[in-house]
Image (cartoon, rainbow, N blue to C red; front, side):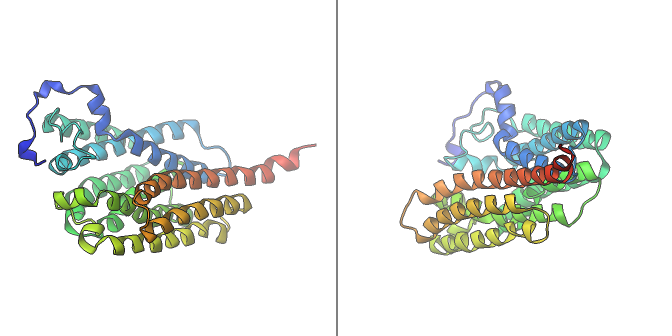
Length: 309
């Protein structure tokens, strides 16, 4: 259905649930989990509760603002795709100026809170991620190149770095490695969904990889980038950032991750791409959860266990 064919709905039809929807709360929740792990890994002890509270709140508000900007910029594209056609702007329930104002309010509140209660480095890095996602990726890269996900993945990979800098006040190789993990994971994660939604992207004229290079090539890239993700996820153990608990956990997760990527690559199961997409979300959450478990297991062995009678 083209945008011109959509029925016009009175602006008063929108409500508070639409404001929540603009912020993509489920996506932001995953980002905040990754940021929380970054906070925990930045210190051998428990991070300050105040820093955790204000850091997550500021990062969450800014991420919700970026998501709302995405709704504004992509409203015509969203109207053409079944997956997104019921979003507030795509369905014409909400006027664009209201959404734009809400996006600005969330973003300014998030960055301002980080400047006020956390530190300037985290605030500026968060602002850079917001601009990278809302403007560079959504407004330009998404419509310019089939490598949009790869290049734009840097902005989406920032949460663990933001969490780390919120606690430590500085960056380093460890949080950058966490960024690299999400950066490598993003292409097989999103291209699996793009395979499932290929026809919708084609109708909307978005140059996603399955549209420009075909499904067979995209399936191969999912398989290859999956192995790249596996290699990168082993680096925390290689550099001594994590220990045996992480190694065992990540090997189990990688095994299941690559089973799904293999099914996508083979192309025999039409349901495999969507199933692989959903598993990849559980995979990245599980990976960061195992990192967190390993971190506190090492802390226990180092600080608590020797003090026991």
